Length: 291
Image (cartoon, rainbow, N blue to C red):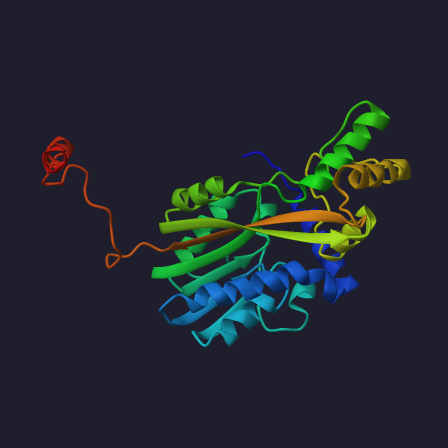
């Protein structure tokens, strides 16, 4: 398996974000938690045991508790700083420390895109669910921060004659649905929501990303300190190419939502291949006769 993400660096950035403590920068997490609550409201089920897995802030767990559909919620995080004194379980990144068949509901918000082995983590989540248990997740998807990616690449190509990736690659919504199937979930569903945020400058966007712990943690990122001139030129390119009429710049976040169920005998299943009683040719012939 290719190591795409520097996992210790990811955790270090999350610790730093917790230390910064800029609540305003967590607007995407709060929005995701609100969307989670809306999605759960459409599910005609109650859940005895739920877990918020590596969700970084209390927002996901609070949404579960406030839904009125969950009896008990457990937070799982990779560092004590992320629990911030709350009760919860500490676990190594990409490891679900819960017994098989111990959950009815598992959620993961805005961290799956920073996982090296996403199918492996989803398999662990599916195993932790009881039959007919539900998983709901949200992750950054293809198109996220495309403006920033383009501006940085263009600036570095112009100044250095070449460029190194500085923004994570993100899965598209079709790939995400395939990940659920690979992990053995039944009835997988994926969709995407686009969020556009406006900033005065690229540096204001980067300040928010730093406060979210979302700056680049690519395993193959450049290790040398990037020169100030690179970011100054990237900010100019960002404004030249993307600024709106009032001079402010947009930043695009595409949030891919995933849901799937742990297989159970009670679930609706597609008909067995070859079990149809009427052939396609016969159906078409009947339709021609009616016409």
